[in-house]
Image (tube, helix red, strand yellow):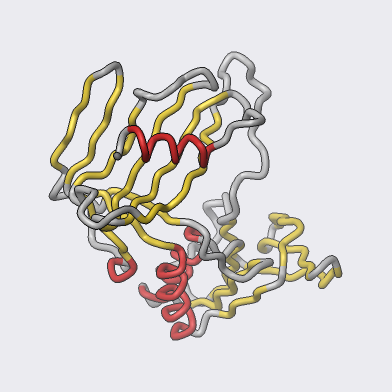
Length: 248
């Protein structure tokens, strides 16, 4: 909502819609509940939560998902041009949350708050009006009609990039990898490899990323920064090669 004359979500009493129940949308719904905002909050998502990813971040401040953290690393390594730097970040560790743990904690908090969760409902359009925001809703291809809210927060990923300004080219980050089981005692679990650029660069700016969750388990990802997502990049093969030749 852009008009300064309209109420804020801290005022009494409003209907709030959160579009998308991923990390951003669910975190926002949890925050509304934790702060005791007097509002009817509805969370929309067309699908059930997927447990197919991890989210990593610098743990710089207390947060509501500390119990969902799988692993913290007090040191991180960056390599490039034949040099290596390992940095002690113990006061602000690099932390990882698995989607399954995040969604479990988020669901518990959201259920306890009384927030309405509408799974299987997609938001087809969002229109701002003088009296609120209208959402066009659908489910499995069938139109459900239009509902009005005072505030709407859209937590969905951008559907496309604005490439109109060719003088400012866009670089896309794309990646893939695998989680490997290795012999016990193989890995130093105190160090995360954030960026290792000492790998082939012929497909674009390329670095490897390795997170040892335990001495016998590691996530290895092959990451590229390119103007377009290229075809034929075998992320998993890159990860396997890196695991053999660099991680041993």
